[in-house]
Each structure stands twice: as C-alpha cells, then as structure tokens.
Length: 139
Image (cartoon, rainbow, N blue to C red; front, side, top):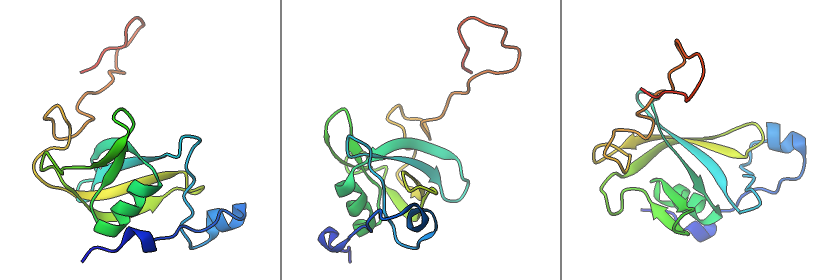
C-alpha cells in the first residue's frame, strides 16, 4: 500500500557536515523549487533520461515507488508512464554529496522511456573521434 505523501518530511539543511555526512535526506531545491534527477536502468546502468522534481513530485515518488517528475514545460506533476504505460518502478534512489541532485535506479516498464519511441533519451552520441571543427556531429 502506498505511503501518504503528507507524512514524508525532509531534514533541515543545518550544516555542511550534516548535509555531506549525515544520514537524513535534506534535498536542495534550486531557485525554481526543482532538483535534477538522472534516471538509469537498475540492471544495466544505462542512462535513461534526465528530468526534474519539485518537493511534491519527490514525495510522490517516495510514496508510491514509481517515478514522478515535474514537467517544466507543462508546469504539472508528471507520473512517468501514467498515460504511455512506460512506468518507472524505483528500485533505488541516491543523492549526491551536497544533496542537490538525485539518481533513480529504475525498472523500466512498458517498453522504452523516450517520447520519441527510443529505449532511452540518450540514443545519439556526440562524435568525438576525428572531429576537427565546425558543427559537432551526432551519430
């Protein structure tokens, strides 16, 4: 049974030491109330996508165990897969040393995760070999 998001509380950001070494989650949201979230496949570690969360979407993610993001373009909560079937079941959540970024390790359901139909949003590679200037090619 999902947890009620209203009972989820984040720790205060009291000191650098407690943020970097403490054992309480104290996410740092930017001036727009957002935190970056990198999502990777739990089994393969393949990067799937980058999105943003606000406090409400982060609490929803913790409460239901599925990725919920904040759509910056639509300005709404975005439960990944709610309409597409591309649900992301959260297997692990990590935060970086200063708690201003999140990594989700997920089980990707319903096929790929990209709105283009690709398995992931990183389906193109910036070509570094042989580049000598001009427009940087993608492959």
